[in-house]
Image (cartoon, rainbow, N blue to C red; front, top):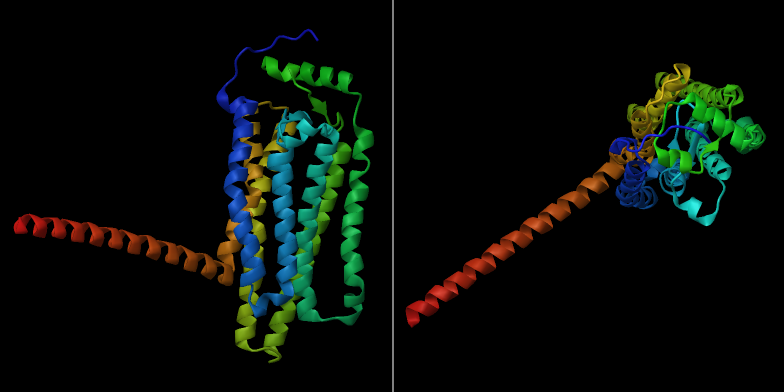
Length: 341
């Protein structure tokens, strides 16, 4: 392919910077994720027992998305084109790029379904409708089936790669030489199906969350007005509901931000590898931020974290005091010994 290339690119534009950012995020996030699992499994109170395994499911799906995105695949994306190549571990095991792409899409689907499921659980807990109870599990499974059905055409939309790559490189400005030499993969030359399928599933899921939340709030208020629940129960349910909204909402911004940049780049045909890399890294922080938010918005987990932090600080300060006392005694013994001499 006769194309002119750039010999040197900036650090932030390089795949090395992106790989380093991915691995740092993974290393920092792993102990936080493990602590999150420990809190859910062992520090969830009786008041939250109905939602415990839904929290486990949500946290597991977020962690798996985190690792599939930031460790296994590590995508180097060439926006505004739906093209790029992986930098992650799976490339060393011969996993095709299209399969790695589908893995990320499937794990993002699982995260979205887990979020819908946790709000449905709160709806089911408050309403206790026997008819809905018999259909709710099938309803949830249908989400995964629908998502996989929407993902299945992606394989058949993949264009012939040599022609597609030639078209991508023609429409982009001169790139660093290593990009032309890399195994660039073009997901699609047509954005229509990908955008329509993704937006349809996301919008419908958000609509379901909104419906569950609306019914949940109205039902809880009616129960309070009819004296069916105490003010304390109402306060606890409201507090937990808002905690869930914050737990889901704040990390969601970490995904909306790079998605918004991608949309703008595609709409205006704007290429900026530095901004793309930063946007991709922002998305990789979703799991870490999600776990941190979960630990602080739920009172039992926050208490467990603060207790551990206090005990560590107390232990460190006591060790320092002991060390100072031992040094003081050593000096006194030395002085006494000199006086005797």
